Image (tube, rainbow, N blue to C red):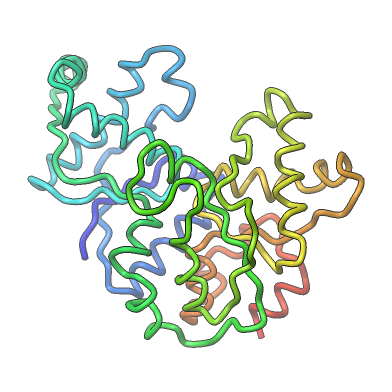
Length: 289
């Protein structure tokens, strides 16, 4: 299994632990990641309100660079926001001749051409579809039995593109969690939007969303996610959400590859666990025993 790897800005900054864990787990599973040479920001959510063409062209530039490294191949994207942006650009390149022409006119300024070859894949898709619980289970060196884990998908890896899971009632994480020996916490909030940047622009509304998700996870030992924005919203804003809710909503929030890596026997350092803002003591005792 070979993939072109697009880490995006979050995985080189605020979500370095997601990058470390993704690389470590996929390497242990025998997958080869080739980072796209000279990749740049996909535009996040800031570019589109300024220029739709700019947003598409920033993502298409990265796809063009990958196409320049090989005639085809899947581009693996761990960040859900980056995945959505690259997926939008890829779809235009493949299905819209006029859109493709406008994008390539913009890319001509940097002597690049994008054709929409290969596929854009979210990390969860690769873990659930290409490796699967059957492929990962033999790699588990220890059981995480006794842990109750709430799978949190967020929205951007599921919607609007329906590629590998039910966008309203996703289930793809469940077999992967069960492969570690942990129990899947039953809840209805796995696909609920965390509010993304709403907590910065309208804090009261954003924190209410965060509080609702954290409250629903009560009874679980931890939440696992596959999105840097979701992770930081559910992790970094717990204290404020608790104050607004008038109750303690503290819970550990890990990335899915960190959980998988722990069961595979990879070191805490290799998985970047020291970079998570909070891992509650009770959870730490269970995952490090």
